[in-house]
Image (cartoon, one colour):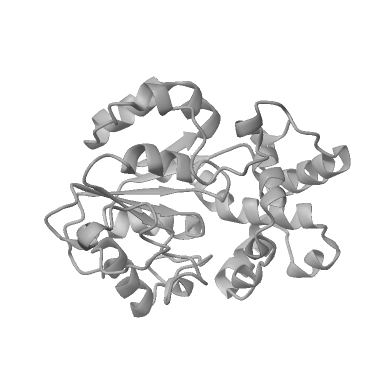
Length: 282
């Protein structure tokens, strides 16, 4: 059982990479005296992020090392240039315990552990989901090597058994996958276990459709009201601006639809069907 700890200043912002997590974390966390912890689960940029990176963690299989790392993250005891890149680091003020009014923890490789974080640590979760076609083509544009590496998933027996039993997926299928198919499989694994349990999640676990949120600032105001957040004074003028992590060639920056290979679209659609994610099929 997790040690009792008061994390009532915390919000987790999470979702698949290129889904709008940086945008949402920034418009919340750039408020004065809000502390953003940027991707403390990163396996290369943090010393112990590998403990929770791409891991399917539940209360029944959580290790003590994983629980301890979560506590250190939420207690603001984990810090380096990567995690603190969006924080006020003058005189290391971001680490002073009396300074932050809110802690905004931004994850992109921790989706499979979000229900645990919400339930065990009693931290609200803003889970942002963007349509998979745009996410996958954006991921394939930035080409971060880790996006195509599914070995963390593959090495987990519990996750492997669930994929086989619930969706008929076996890792041997991966041998013939294209890069786009690998990205789609990652997206499905990262999101399916939340979406299939949507009705069971607590009231403090908010599933936010990116397309709805970015087009309606009133949704953001309601989040702020419900969770005691203070909107930036300039929020109306910056709300739809790209985040600092948006790719230079992104449709969001260039305001026009980029060409998407029809064969790739068909492959994405086929995998979405396999995982019963037909609500996202175009």
